[in-house]
Every structure is written in structure tokens, then in C-alpha cells.
Picture: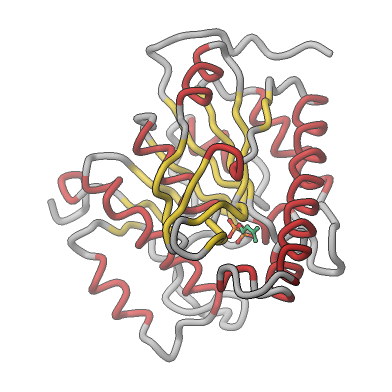
Length: 279
Ligand code: IPE
């Protein structure tokens, strides 16, 4: 197996890409990867000349089993230990499938277990050992980790989302941007899966955030729009220190490459006020 020559270059910008579970897994059954989509993404990633960290979500691999055992509620009773093992096991399967597919397309991927290097407090990341990420990035590797069940100082264990991990790593490792790859084009004023007339919100800044959120409205906030707002809320501190967050559709071929080449694609950009339209 040969890997692309993503050699050590301190001047290359770092991008953290979240591979959303709803985009990379299929909903028609547990433990099904959307293989053609992941292959297309892998081809694009092999051609990207930036340092990259990948964080994948759970989709049909982690959410159903985690929900069944109430893992998100933290430790309640011994029976949940089995659920943690099952959740971890399905996330590991997904990580392995992604690792193999990415490696087959010459992406120098190196898997990390979030549960082995992260500690949370009530579901919020408290500590992450970022040193191995930094060192492997400098060698030209593409670290891959996932949303996961991690040890929690308050609740025993908790689920930390890939969104939170992506933003945390971007902050600590000075990434220029975070890209949230989803199965819709970005943040809409209502759920685009339910409403064909939903409008894509192209630009959000910390200053315009509350007005944009109000335009979605409580009653219109479905799981999809809530998930999108979660990504935005997670990113406020990152954008406030000058970085950019993009929410885009991974199911549109070429989107990643075009974005990174500076093209104006259909997506939502969450950018600092100083670069916003009214600045
Ligand atoms: C969830 O990760 C991790 C587990 C359920 C163990 P995410 O919250 O990032 O997953 P997606 O992207 O929403 O599927």
C-alpha cells in the first residue's frame, strides 16, 4: 500500500473535517456504510493539499445501541456496561471500515480512539491528549477519530459528539477551519427534508446568530435544524477567534474540493463578524 505524499509542512493550513453519521451511513439498517459515498470522499481527500484531521460520527452504527442502553444518561446500573461495549464495538467497526477505504485511496490515515485519549465532564470535553495528534499530523498522517463513549468525571461515562471533538481539536491544534460534512447543504430556515421551500442560510456571523436562529423559530426546529444549530452553537468560540466553520453536503460530488479551492459552493459559512456581509 502506498500513501499520498502529504509530507510535513508547517505552513500548510489544518482542516478538521467531520464526516457526519447521517451522510456516511445508511438508514435502511444498522451497521451499513454508504460505501460509494465514502469512496468518493476518499478520492477527494487524497487530492487535498492541507493537513487534515477526520472525525466521524455514528449514524446507524452507534446511535441505536447507545439509545437502547441510555448511555447518554451516564452510569446508572451495571447492565449499561454491556451497552457501552456494544456501542464501542460498533464505532470501532465503522472506524476500521473508514480506515481501510481511506487507505485504499492513498490517504495516510491513522485511527485514534477518542475513548483512550479524552475525558469529559457531564458530556463536555475536559481533557484531550492532543500531543499524538500533533506529532502524527507533522509526519503527514491524517488522524481519524470519532464521536465516542468516554470516561466522565461526573457521570462515569458520557457520549461526546464528533461535532464537539472536531471543534475542540480545531481550537487546540490551531486549525484554520472546521468543515461539517452532512447530508443537506447547510443550515436552512426550516427542515429541507420536510419543506421543499426551505431557504439555505448562506452566511452566519456571531453577531447575526441570534437573529438567524430566531428566523428558524422554536416550532420549526426539527431534529435536522436542531442538529445544525448544535454545530453552530458548538462553534461560536472558534469563530470568535477568527476561524471559519463550514457546513456542507457531502453527498454532492466535488463539494469538498471546490470549497477548499476557494469556490463559492452551496453551503452555510459561519464566519467572524469582521468578514461578514455587514462588517
Ligand atoms: C455520536 O457521535 C457517537 C456515539 C453515539 C457513540 P456523533 O453525534 O458525532 O454522530 P453523528 O454524526 O450525529 O451520527
